[in-house]
Length: 147
Image (cartoon, rainbow, N blue to C red; front, side):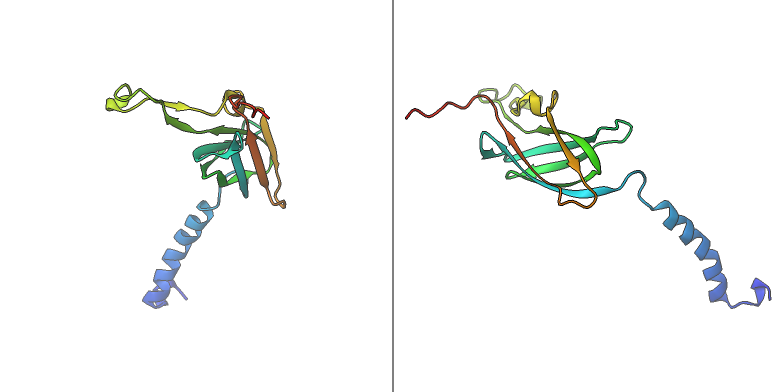
């Protein structure tokens, strides 16, 4: 039986099927799998209102994963294994109105460098763990309460 003897619907399926298979094979995720990660991020015991968190695998050949911090909570995905963690959060610098881009205020990262550009933070992301982490950051600006 030749394809000419098949009905038009079957002929169409025979033409579309190889393309569909090729597309599906190309849609698989490239690289290592990622796993859900959740966490709490505080600075001086206060939730970080808005910020970013980056999980960078110890193996630098594997790219980082990024997440957002909202009201002290982060939820994202990261690759399994030991991860270096960087946390940033920005705010307007008081008294700089008009000095920034197109007349805006200047913006600064208020998270200390030991938590981002010179991070000391790391976690182990597990394929079968709950991957919940708490990041208690300290600015060094807190004043102790007098008794």
